[in-house]
Image (cartoon, rainbow, N blue to C red; front, side, top):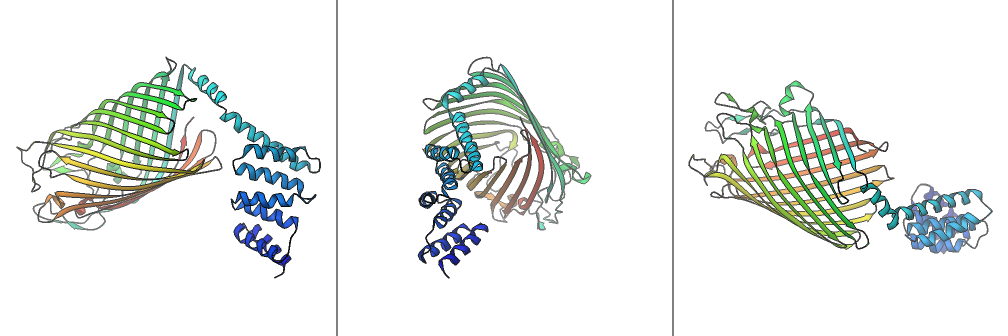
Length: 509
């Protein structure tokens, strides 16, 4: 083809948003001897659209030689400079475009661009930000309300095994044919927090949270569950923006009530032992204090947390209760290599000490003379995150968990967890979050069905979650969530596949 023909074909590709292909045609046009200011201009705009801003600047500067293209080229050089992050250069070009007399429309666009840049500079000005922070801190009291109502579908309500299996935990070893049931449900959540800022840097609060899920079909009622939680405590924050220091201390006492049914995953029915209904076994009240501390200084951040709780389960006949004490101590250290990348190491040590459940012997049986069950956990993790743009970042993480059964070690396991997450924001209204985790458990002593004849117990899991949020108004959001949950194990009682899809609205101030 001739130079003009390459140029025309490049324009066609540009109109179809095929910028890299258009750039190839423009280069072929130049190599064929076609050398005009319009070619340089179109090449510069194509580079800009393709995100190649340095090359875009070089081509656009060549187009300035044309009197007919000078005004629009000046404006586009401003856009390109702003995309490069050079606000001063962008303002220079926009002011030239604003002050010219040939094109009033371009002058109007330049004035709008200048005002937006100046507004961003004001928003980021440390003095203005500090004044606004102090104004907010001077508010003596404030009330925060949040609510979410959704409607969704659950492909496996009771987490039932997908295939028939032989129950080797039963002396009769019956063949069980699970019934996988699906249905519609409504997740709901609501929270309210009232805080009194009695001091300059410290406030006292009381908060309430409700969370629940309710299934629409009567035969799925056993899957309904809800949680009420009440907390009160204090929040302290001392921020020094000049030296980039920030200290936060959170302390609270929480009490929560959880209501759910202890059902049989094979058919969703209530559990029965020796003719006695034990469906209330999972209902509990938990309460206790917690404390978190965070100190950051420029590139470094350090966090600590302490928690102690009592879990009081419903007393039922025929089986031991799940009552236990829960204690946790953990922390993390974080380092920012740049303003867009960080690395975090975390460690958590916690324990569950049961008061009524007996530990198992190494053959999987439970003797009345055995000690009460005590499980100690150690979690070690590392997380890396990288920000690509102001609204896009991704992260990867690895966590190693070791659980120790303090009796003879029957319930010991190690778990390796590999995960990743990504966040993307578009246009200030749309947000997309996605995460996925693969977890591999290794049980050195436990048996499938707690039966030595069957062999070692294994467990693998995959969890994928996607959340898309669209802001409809200042306080109202449309939320779509999809999740995939898969479990595979030699203990076929606990393996299942489950998918959930939820669409709802969220309100927050």
